[in-house]
Amino acid sequence: MFDALTQKLNGVFRSLSGRGRITEANIADAMRDVRKALLEADVNYHVVKQFCKDVQAAAMGADVIKSLHPGQVMVKLVQDELTRLMGPVDPRIYYVSPGPTVVMLAGLQGSGKTTTAGKLAKHIRDKDNKRPLLVADDLQRPAAIEQLFTLGEQLGIDVYKEDGVKDAVKVAANSVKHAKKGGYDVVVLDTAGRLHVDAEMMSEIAAVAKTVNPHQIYLVCDAMTGQDAVNSAKEFNDRLELDGVILTKLDGDARGGAALSVKAVTGKPIKFVGVGEKLDNIEPFHPDRMAGRILGMGDVVSLVEKAQEQFDEDQAQKLQTKMAKGTFGFDDFLKQMQTVRKMGGFASLLKMLPGMGGLGDLDVDDREMSAMEGIVHSMTTAERRNPDIIDASRRRRIARGCGRDPQDVAGLTKTFRRTREMMKNIGGGGPEAMKGLMSGKTDMFSAMSAAGKTKQRSKRKRQPRKKRR
Image 1 (cartoon, rainbow, N blue to C red):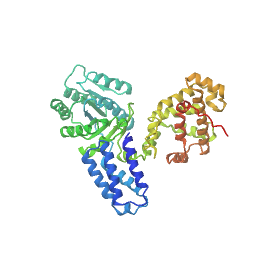
Image 2: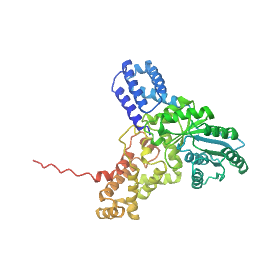
Image 3: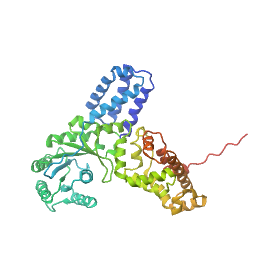
Image 4: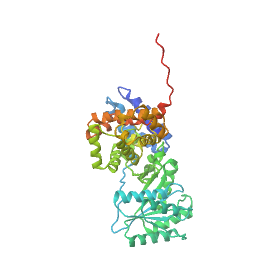
């Protein structure tokens, strides 16, 4: 997410940090590089121009000129301006009483509305404890109704549909009546994708909005389309009076142009972002946290929130006791691996840590994590509980069982022992240890990352030792 922009901005700040003092000339040079980086990220030209003007004006203040750490001060100024540019945003959905609250999704063809409808309904149910109803009102795209119905079955969420009906306005109106009778709290209306230049289709969605009078209208945009997403948001807003934008595929957007431009151009905030293909990969949008990610400063708040959702307090206490005693085994390791997967994968979590987001060469392949799980599954119960008994013959047997090299098994067990000993030394991974981990004082993540790369290391050719003269 925003990898290219993060690297370029960090390069600008590094160049400033090497200077003892900052001058007007330094600031001007830095802002030229920032302007170039933002334009290459496909941020709207007028937004870039105003952004750089505001940052430069703030940077000319006495606090920056007199600062002994100009690079750090500039980072703070840019972060504040990025936050202002994308916000303010209240990501909450305000529900009406009595219900149902009607949420309508609109957008271009192929923007991911149907999948987003399912994600949003799951978020409403799980986070806000509401009973949602999905409405299949996309009557244009073949199989759209079936897709939403399948998503509803996977999520355990009811779907309203009318087979053979081609009147989107009628289906929408009937769905709200059905929701009132059924006691649903929220109606999530999935409408057909349409081009903003298609007058007939735009008139249809305007008629749907007029009939059901939705409490919230969200435009679903593909973040990877950059300025096209921003332009379509502007056109839709002129016809529908949007309440916000949902950006999909943000995890695959290395530039960030849409996220940085949409609020400034349309005046409508980003409410949610899609950050993966799984049905729980939708997050409320927080401008301050996103600014931190863009600048490579991490997003510890979101990381902690993800952890709180997945960790059971009793299990966490038992795990901490094992860590403190040094009895942490591979079975416990597997459970933690599964938790990491639920939290979005190891690579995405690493980038939420301060200082990790700007590392362009950060290469933690989640497929290697699967390979590590395969190695553990090839162990006996005794070997999982006590990895110290794994000798050369056992390594060969384990390697044959999972289709890996014995060096991979050796690398994993070695890293595991080192990590286990480190956990024991820092008191079992308790609150103080977590603080140290978040502040970069421990190398636990580095050790885990190294374990994930055992395959690459095992394939390197060993260099012959030089003979002593």
